[in-house]
Length: 383
Image 1 (cartoon, rainbow, N blue to C red):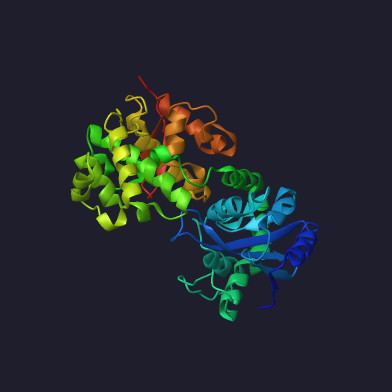
Image 2: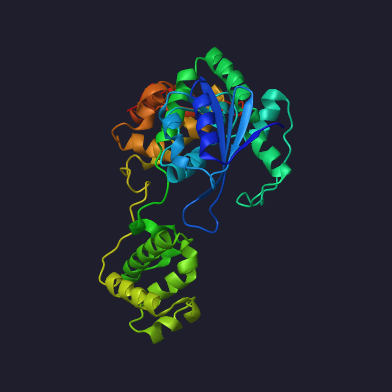
């Protein structure tokens, strides 16, 4: 496959200027994040017209992408949530207008297909499988690596053409535009350091002051990992964090006896910081966040299961990926009457919102249709 390798600002500037003259371009990225806190961008693949370029982010000024990303030139991508996060971090911005082929496929009866599955289904082309463990930061990249990377953008615009045609026939083009914009604006990146402790497995077994210690330690670990750009577990393991939270040591000797703590991992400075976090945490009154289920009025909780089942049935009927039509969180937000809840707006309201209102009012019920599906039936005597 023919492509250009871009490793200078001059060449990148010329490529970006060409792309801005087009109505659309395809983009993909390769990145690593297993050894760092923040993702490491290793490659950017671009296609416009019949040209493909592989951009080396280790050799160019990534802020040069800003003008292209600000423009109205459509960026065609596939499963772009992580790509957008990586671009925002590495380049300082991400495309202003996107069409995600995975999202679009969800509106024609496919459920979050991989790129290879979508290319096979729509173009009858079988993509070569790449090495899942390849090192994209290695230089020079091999010919096979480059060819595989180029393939990730080779077919995106052909898929765009096919999907737009099918969506137009179904009257769902606007739905996809809205869903892609939701994806583009979806918050990404690290959560608040204060909430880092909630991601630890088994943290909900902690009681009393141990929770406060876990929160303080989790925040300390997250901030240290950010500053050092290493995974949080490299600062302190989850096991050690839980062990310290339970033991609540007041001295270095107590600390080193806590389960999971390795003395060789903690120098004098880190030992002082850990003990300070413990002292800070033991005086905190920390409660676990109220779950979404508990945050719904108890009279409405039985409705959650019913509505979830009906959303799944509507997704099957309309051949829409159920996660695009309405997630559990969407249902709970609708029940709580959260302003701008997704099920109360736009195309989702038309498909499912009115049905939910009927169910909640007691005017409609759900029954088995005898053919493997569900149906909504009017309740003649709701009282």
